[in-house]
Amino acid sequence: MSDISILEKIIKKNPGEPEFHQAVTEVFDSLQPVLEKHQEYVEAKIFERLAEPERQIMFRVPWVDDKGVIQVNRGYRVEFNSALGPYKGGLRFHKSVYIGMLKFLGFEQILKNSLTGLMMGGGKGGSDFDPHEKSDMEVMRFCQSFMNELYRHIGADRDVPAGDIGVGAREVGYMFGQYKKLTNQFTGVLTGKGLGWGGSLVRTEAAGYGLMYFVEEMMKPKKQSVKGKIVVSSGSGNVSIYAVQKCQQLGAKVVAMSDSDGYIYDSQGIDLKAIQDIKEVRRGRIKEYLKVRPKVEYHEGSSGIWGVKCDIALPNATQNELDGKSAKILIDNGVIAVGEGANMPSTPEAIHAFLKAGVLFGPAKAANAGGVATSGLEMAQNSQRLSWTFEQTDAQLKAIMQNIYKNSYAASEKYGTPGNLVDGANIAGFVKVADAMMQQGLV
View 1 (tube, rainbow, N blue to C red):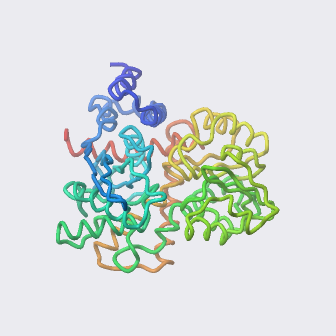
View 2 (cartoon, rainbow, N blue to C red; view 1 turned 180 degrees about the vertical axis):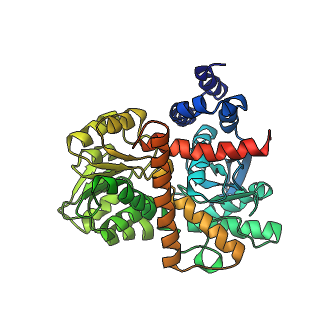
View 3 (cartoon, rainbow, N blue to C red; view 1 turned 120 degrees about the vertical axis):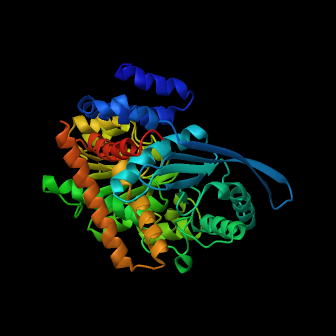
């Protein structure tokens, strides 16, 4: 079988899943020099096995809304690969969730978790349930029904889900409570828990902080720094908010943020406390920022944010939000670095344009690994029955992100594309998993 037919076979076997196809194709392309050098991986069909989940679970989730009407959603868990440890990956509650999206996220999670150096396999799950505009009681009833099935498949040493889009501290709390009731066990089965009952400090900030630790490290070889730079950060969820916070701590000025309705441009620098009040306290829309700063520009449609001139661009919202046209605008406007805080937010055309133009590019599976890294640190704290300080956890997170950059760059050099961190991250993550799979036999 030729290399091309390997990829074609995987795509044909998984029809109607474009996000999964995109993720698998990107990794496969990066791995060509590895597969040429290591025929043992080819003979053992490591890539084909890696692209096939060890287990996919789909189930019905019935619940009752506040009007007493029965609603029915669909729940999923894709347990992709456990070569390096228990399955680890978030639960996403959003109307767009379907099996193909979760397979893309779970496949990426295998390599991302590998890059952290922690003992975590890869998985992903969720539901097409949308918690927005639902009452706390409706969310609780849904989460309890969801866990009534999911609890059979997870555990501290089996599969440890976390939060993701639509799943925050509230949802994790409801699910953990139901798991505890069903199993009569208090274990580290979910991460993102409340600080008073097993959660970790820095977990809220982790993805955003980790992104900026990676970007700062990525800029050092070019004698550059985040300090003094103009930054645009798409999105206004957890990743974007804390990436902005860390940018400001590092001395940068963030001038634009967005949500699904549109974006704001504040030439004086974003007032992060106002954004946090709108998004974290009141769960409002970013347009409400104009009530705090009436002279700020607001534009309908979020894609226009990439037209704002900046030194550093942070696509922190959702997959494929930054396309080739937007990449060209950023390049023409003199962007120096791009750090992906969301999962696969740049299209292949955009990535190609950035690399060709010599823009420093931090791919998602490396740059946004801070969230799952701190989830891994939460798992370690739960196993020890300990709670680490903010400073201790933050220092570990920073060291992990610096190592991810170092290992990704080293892999890019070893396999002939020095400085291409897309290739480097894919290769560094893959080789560790592949070696573990080889040593564990055909399982």
